[in-house]
Image 1 (cartoon, rainbow, N blue to C red):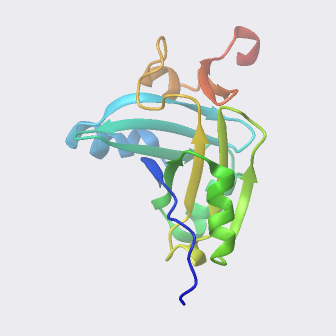
Image 2 (cartoon, rainbow, N blue to C red):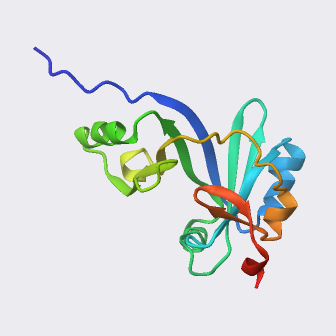
Length: 177
């Protein structure tokens, strides 16, 4: 009798395709101006040393543009080694821990697991386990397909927004110094 294999991992959504760029403003010419992308959210992640901008492209694709804001960020190293291009693909699942069990049962290599936040739990499948693609697998309790009220693209591009508790938030005046 054949061995039963684990059931497939139910993917709730392809959340976004992340693209590494040297300049978000330059990338906006293609993804916003020519392809009609509409701003959703973004901000600076000081810990990672990156700025992000997420755009909704019709008919339902989300692109995340990633730009380094420091020379010591992982993204700066990535761009120096590989140049601009696809960085990762993010999938939302119902249960990250169950997905991780399925991956391990198949011998896939997992890196960067973070289960510390109840609103965004993530793990990465290494590209050598995913046919050359870095897969970010997430379970989340938040909506990621709607703009954040009070935050504009201009705010993000000028560095006035930062990620706090897994959500973009305007910097306080104390943060500006």
